[in-house]
Length: 390
Image (cartoon, rainbow, N blue to C red):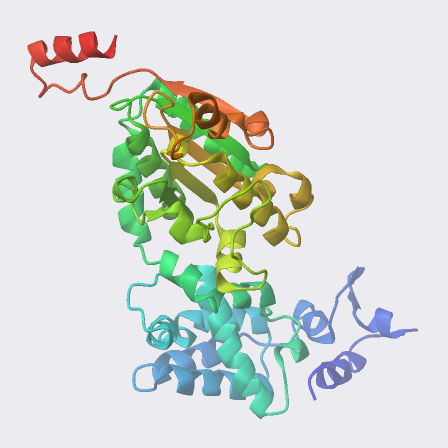
């Protein structure tokens, strides 16, 4: 009978209560439930015997059987602290969760965070409780299912982007971070600050070949992956995308139409898995941006504002819907290819001529040629490259 049982216990010891609130009040502190009031009065014992029973059963029972046992203890035994019991038993209750989810997704490389493992475990316990005519809502002291996280975990695209080892990413990040020069570190700190504060915005990193743009992108990717966050890395050309971890072409990732005009939008519907992935992503890196027509960036911007409007405040008024997007490239290299177009039309098609994108873009320049600073490069070659660069 749950709370009625604990109410009866309190009625035997509480003197002169004038209301139900008085019954739950112990030493001047009103407790949210009768059970917690009983616990404060020392009327309940500890739950060591229940933890021991699950620990002992874990030696020969499977995860689903342990969850059945846990529910039986909740329903039919006197548990003094349900929340503490749950977290004490969580390693046993969640032992097979990751394996089951990988099997369901048909992807053995998916990595789950502790929060997702907790949520999956609660979902399985909820199913057992429903079979007994109960729900997690009947046990307010237990953690509850995060419904928003459930939608994220059912998204196959998000799960595909989570196929990395966090421990390996942490090691890789520390190695890469040590190699950043002062200019790269400035960009790194600014991008991390935008993501952490959720201010969003666009960043453009201008630098010629050899100044370490790709190195910077790899450092940012490993940084956010080491936190369990998702980074989408795209490039305007297929060759450039191969240099980025998990790289794709921008057209492939964002479904940008091949025939573009000033009012184009990407072929992404709100509510699809791809829209969910974009909402969940921490950072988007777009390399070789000058190679792409500005209409492509405006189409992505227009689509992101629509997709993110229900998840990011003011997304319809913010560049790229409030997502942090880092662009990179060199305007002295290849610009968008427009057949038979004059110079003025080609120049006008570049992203820095976009009033909606470039006006909101923070521009950084990388000037230190990292290739020439390598100890393995011959001095004559260094001089030759510097002369060519000038």
